[in-house]
Image 1 (cartoon, rainbow, N blue to C red):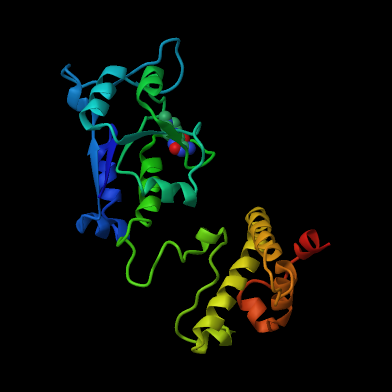
Image 2: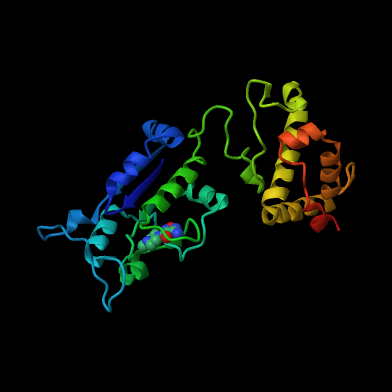
Length: 276
Ligand code: 4HQ
C-alpha cells in the first residue's frame, strides 16, 4: 500500500481536501494512506515557531531548517521518495502521476510563500515537482493535486468500469464530449452512433472524436499524438487503412453538420497547418 506523508504548516488543509470523491473513498478503503505532519511539533519556543525571515531580506517567511529536518527524519525511511513542491521542478504530467503511484512511500514537503532553507533541499529532497507555471502561496495545493492525480492509478481507487488507462490522456488525447438523457435538449441531439449498441463502433468513434477535439483545442498535444500514430502506421505490414491524418480527415468529413455542431467541431481551421 502506498503511504504518503505531507509536511506542512497547515495540516488541516490536507485531510479535508483529500476526504472527497474517489480519493476519499480510496483512503476509507485503505487503498492508500495520507497523513499530514507539522514541523511545529518540533518547535521548542512557546510560539512553536517553524519559520523565520530570510537572511539578506526579501519577501515571505522561510521554513526553518531544524524543525523541518526533524519532521522529515520522523517520517522518512530508506525506501522513501522525498518531494518538494516548487515551480522550479519539472511539471507534473499524467505519466509522472502514474510513476509516483508505483512508489512505496512518498513524502511531500510543502513550503509556504518564501520556501524552505536551501540546506534542507540540498540534503533531503530527492526531487522537485511543479504543478504549473504560476505561483502558489504554498506547496499544499500542489501536493494535493499530485495526490489526487496519482491516486487514480492505484488499483481499486476508480470504480467499476472506470480505469485510468482508458482515460483519453493515457493516449495523449483529450476527452471527447459526453451526453446523457434526454436525447434532445436545447435544440441539440445526441449523436446517433452513441444511441446504437455497437460497442466497437462507439469506441472507434470516441477515439476519433477525441483526436479531433485535441487537434482543435491543443494542437501541441495533437502533434505528439500524430507522430506516434504515424510511427505505428509505418511499422504496419498490411496497410488496410490510409495514413492516420487522412483517415481522421475522412472521418470528420463524414460527420453530419448536426453532429459537427453538437461536438464543437464545425470549424477545424487547423487542418491546413497539418495537412498542407
Ligand atoms: N509554490 N507547483 C512557492 C508553487 C508551486 C508550483 C510552492 C510557491 C512552494 C514555496 N508548487 N512555495 N507552481 O508555486 O508546486
